[in-house]
Image (cartoon, rainbow, N blue to C red; front, top):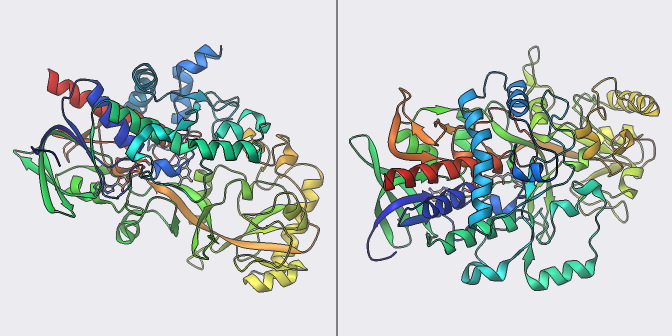
Amino acid sequence: MTDTNTFDVVVLGSGAAALAAAATAAGHGAARVGLFEKADVVGGTSAMSGGMIWIPLNHHMEAAGEPDDRDAVLTYLESLSHGMILPELAEAYVDTGPEMLRWFEDNTPVVFDIVESFPDYHPEHPGGSTTGGRSLECPLFDFNELGEWRDRVSRSRQMPAHVLMNETSLGRGGTATISADLMAERAAANLRGCGQALVGRLLRACLDLGVEIHTGHRAVHLETSANAVTGVRFDSADGKVTVNASAVILATGGFEWNREMVRDFIRGPLERTVAIETNTGDGLKMAMRAGASIGNMQEAWWVPIMDVPDESGDMFSWLVNRERVRPHSIMVNRAGRRFANEAANYNAFGAAFHELDPTSFTYKNLPAFLIMDRQYMSKGGIYTYRGEGPTPDWLHSADTLGELAEKIGVDARGLVESVNRWNAQVADLDDPDFGRGRSINDTHWGDGSRTRSATLGTLEEGPYYAVQVRPGALGTKGGPRTDGHARVLDLDGDVIPGLYAAGNVMASAMGMTYGGAGGTLGPGMVFGYAAGRHAAAVLTD
Ligand SMILES: Cc1cc2nc3c(=O)[nH]c(=O)nc-3n(C[C@H](O)[C@H](O)[C@H](O)COP(=O)(O)OP(=O)(O)OC[C@H]3O[C@@H](n4cnc5c(N)ncnc54)[C@H](O)[C@@H]3O)c2cc1C
């Protein structure tokens, strides 16, 4: 800590929402901005992510000759809302996003490219984009530019560090390939992509703008005076520390690692999360104590997850995204029956795990299993297994579907019937049962061929394989309600002076929806920007 404990703006957390808020506040005239992170590293889940941001109406689309349309975007969000997206927040998001993007690109190293031809997650909904343009990512970033901070950024076990999304099969039509030599060169040069590039660049922006960054500071309490927030109390290795601030921006992520909060608020089973383990709902508690109104509490950024071992044998959570979309695979419940379009976007798929059977009063589709055959294994396999050598412990295999069903406790007759039915449908390249392969979303996430066969393929060659797939989340998305400036509102809908929220800690402007690739980091940065801009404006008024 520096000599005095008084800041203009204090930001809590260090993911993309926090870093965007801090850089914006400092860049808009706040003289002293402090960013306080509970963990010993910065970056939160954001640095462990794909790093894409979903910003409709962005100027890159215009430059590419394919400008977006405001009404279309709002229509799209409304079509996904089910009454949970507040129109004023949707409008604030859509209108502030382009400004946020321009400001960062004009004033900081935080620049973006379109992730080419990445369709929205519900591309056929009214206003949805089938051709992409709304999803953006940062170019590779040289981590040496971070100086002493280069080794103090959180890392993912799933996302490759030295790759761009545009170089995976999810970008540029899936044509790009990266040679092992090029990967080695990038690793040696410390050039990083995806969430590392996003956070690296945001962190560089904060350092350039003089933001003071403190790790190992867990915010535990908001100081208030006459209802206004005036500071924060932290637990740190040096004991309790209190700082004063004209504005406090909560950006402490979700409550996904707080089992009690998950039990009390979330709409159905949430068995796994890939978020950083320090996201335990501290910001939510602080906001509630300060009198905030809370919303969207039942929701999360859903994603199917399986358990796999790391190099040392410890199990960790692995996102099951392309794995359940590729051909020669289906997902079944304990009755051995398919229950949803396996290729649907991961957030929407979460709902399928939460279907309760009123007669048996059990979750109908839990446990769920991904079933694959030899063809699947020979065309890429799953996690580290390609069908060669003994089947690893985390995966089940058997020569016949009947034996496989017995091993995993699934109804054998149901499984055999489901596979037969699937094979018959797939012969006609269609899935009348659940519509798999009919959406551009489904074929985009498949095997790269971008036709219906990118996701539709028979299961007919043993051995057969199964892995349990669990209801998981990238993070929760409920918390303090805000206005379009990210100001936290109290129980009467009035602003709590001095308090802002952005990112997964806030009641998401997206309701239960995930609009497209970057649908969580996009709003996180936009409301972080809105908070920083407003907090600085109040100071300089
Ligand atoms: C593998 C993977 C890929 C993903 N890809 C994408 C993608 O491409 N696009 C997208 O939009 N989303 C993606 N996501 C989801 C996205 O990463 C998260 O939704 C997003 O990072 C949340 O950002 P945040 O700033 O709100 O929180 P975080 O980035 O999680 O940051 C919260 C920070 O707050 C800190 N904190 C918590 N409590 C306190 C406290 N009391 N005091 C101080 N600090 C505290 C935490 O330690 C943490 O560092 C992905 C996630 C994963 C895991």
